[in-house]
Image (tube, rainbow, N blue to C red; front, side, top):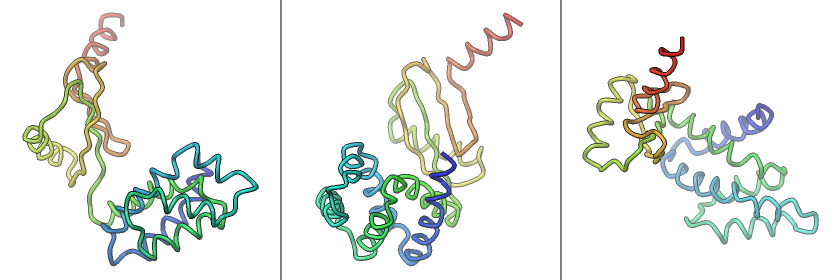
Length: 176
């Protein structure tokens, strides 16, 4: 998907510069637009040659769960008019990366076999922030196949302390 990333980069950088005074507010509506643009039915609707750009804009604006400020509307119109609606999820992803880089944070996904309560997650966040040496925005996803333990993904770094990973290590050691 390097081509999509190449297309999305200038939009993400321009959006980042245009919203630099309120990055957190912009992140809210960018995520909302990302969720909407990721819908395959919307993509099919937008690709229909009988549908105008104004109709696509109206549908997205009507479905949005957050009120879109004028900057968001202008951004969305630009993306639609340039035929880049399919790149919007990647634009949002690159925007989030730029925002995190500026604030010195990273997104982290914690995969767990069982639900993690808020107290445990807060304690885990402190430990992981020391381990990765930066502030982390944690999100939790359940993966019962891990059997136990957790697997943490921060960008391209992975910390896997799951039972499944340990069993795989034991299997490799025994078969080697």
